[in-house]
Length: 244
Image (cartoon, rainbow, N blue to C red; front, side):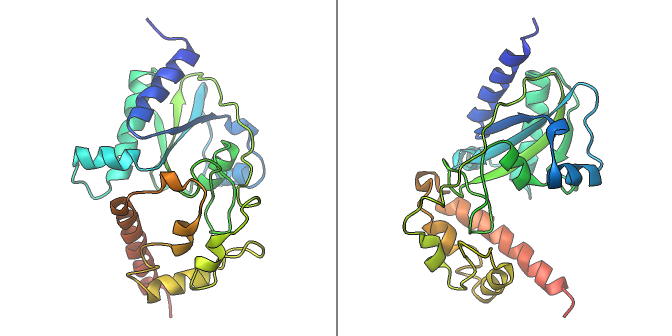
């Protein structure tokens, strides 16, 4: 028996949450405006008949714990697991055996803008978006089209927790002075500091760790080291390939 669309969505979301995908939104691409609309147009990402855009994310360390127990041994465990989950939830709950997976992948999908449309997060002085609930401890894991008229997610624009933060410890925690409440994040200063301090800022952002929002959802030390080292290795490769 086929579940009604709303029940199918709920069942799929519950299954995903048990795997650590505790963020899920179904978005209407036709309502996108401005830079987000232009980015999808430039990437030639157009929904087909009856397709819905699904965005999955993780917050906290639930998925990390699951992957540690799984011991997949792949080079890209988060990406591989996310593709596998997108395929499985579409097949098992949403009646689509071949969902069109956009991310992880090579397409330039504007993840942070999708998160803002979904009501998950908003810009922060850290140069990455912040969730009012999870703080900076969340990430985008999958974006895909599914052929099922799932109900669109009803969202409200996330309100910035930075505005009401009294102490703003992220500003003083940055040794490079790259974090500013007004004037924007100084990316070049951040990258230089990371390359100069590989065992410190290279793998762990002091400002991110100082953020009090969602501190109870902070990644475990093992997860911090994993993501930080992969990010630093990518930065080092980029720096080495950059024309001098």
